[in-house]
Image (cartoon, rainbow, N blue to C red; front, side, top):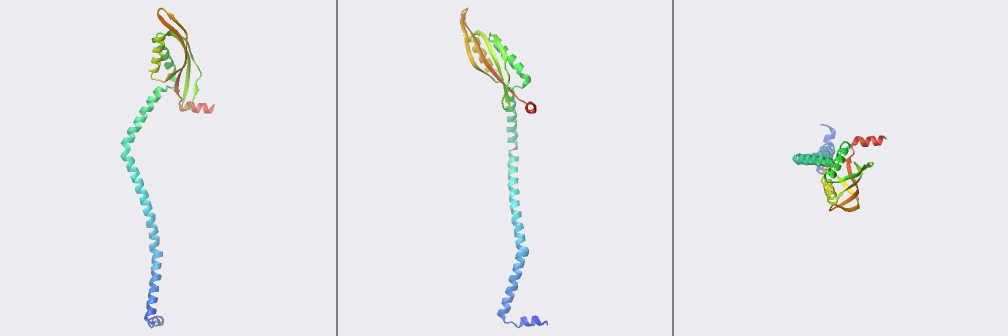
Length: 198
């Protein structure tokens, strides 16, 4: 037998137990630091990834479950946008809108003394299109004209209203009315880009 082994076997039992305990502690530490600790660290990282992925899956599932509702909301927003764009004409529709205003006035029995479009006033995504208007006719004709303009599908604001030359003619009161009719038009993206280039 090897001399070292014989020497170990001759040691007292307490020393043999201490040596065995030391060997087990070194072996346990080597196993812990060499195998268990790295695997534990990897397991913790994988659990974190799993939780993150589960959260993502829950979020995507929630979105998928709400997809019909979101599509319906999107379609409603599209309709609302179309309605809003109906109230804000583009450049091509402004002349027909202004013609519509004069038709409404003539339909109310008014005579147009002045109809002068002014320069546009650009705002954020729209432009104001002011028009100086001067009409004459009966008071009720003027009231009907303002009501009819308010009922147009487009937005038209009547401001700066002044009444002059109020006089009775043939049992009716006629007036001359000066006002500012302001309509609005949608500024398209390409117009904005062209303005920036200039």
